[in-house]
Length: 490
Image (cartoon, rainbow, N blue to C red; front, top):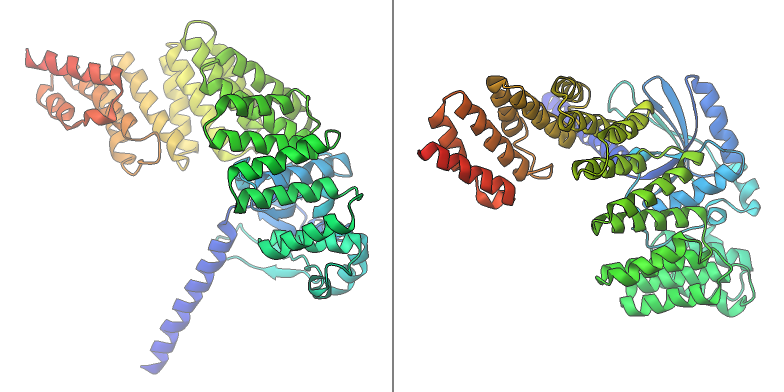
């Protein structure tokens, strides 16, 4: 009996351990991929070269049959962009961000420059002596394994040392170390000491920018905005000015001053304020989104195309091309453009076969939708079925593909098949409160009722329409529901 209890406890503990590892692995973070090979020893050798150059942490990860070598482990997009740009200008022209791990732009509290993300030369000998690869096997499937090379921390002696005794470089590293740990008081104390002791240092603009971020985190928006303005106006010839202007724009946006926010973003986007390429690109994307939100579709399209010209020269960004495709579809449906332009943009995304699965699913679904509006119903159905076969795990796109398969079948007068397709939208995606949502399911019910009316299944159509909550409907769908109920009452 005791052996059985011990065995059960060991199994439970084993499951908990595996769950912890899985939770740790699936946490969303940002990394830079610099190399991929099917040869594991070659990947490990490449990782060791990166370590010897001071990059950290370095990750070797297996995906399908490929071993991918990645650098960095960041919680926000801005930090990753800095490092990616620095690596591309150096020995890694093909480096790119792992899109599956990227969090939303503009969310950073503490941004780090590329130089700050590399270990300073004085630590190189310590790295060679102290670093040992730590292998972690994650039991999340036979195709997954990870080797994690952990980064040593700034030495405890430097962290304990008085701010007034440290060299410029050590004090700067100490401030950054505390910033990374989100230890506010120690970070701010080191940053302020740096400004007092080294007022003429080249690092002063970056230090002041860090202090502005801490003000943004700990104080009012007005105080943070003033700190960012001091960086923007005090150092117009430094890239920190552009980053400060971008953050002022986000503060304005958060306070619903959209016009002022747009002016800040446009200054950076147009090169009126000095900024890094990544900050300028982020400003351009923000302008494009704001134009789109204001229904300035042509202006938004032009802005996104300018972004695409930049990203296509460095690393193809499928999300930018999906935005362009969406705008082409909107413009075409308004009668001012061609759906072929939308399809062409989708094909550009689909040509990148190793792109993020969400982007590929979205592009394929948009093609199905475009062919529906082109009245090429057979092609729309075929592509929608391809989405359901390849990307059923991408629930929002699978739901939309199922819906447009029903729309095409209804347009072809295949009423029974259409009713079945709409029923699958309602039944198979009943967990979809955070997908296209109740509105789409209610729309499916309305079109399913249309199919039932065509099939003379009037009682089923009436019951279905009565189940629909008007709160889930827009004006057009609400009107269609009323018309169908009026038709059934005659």
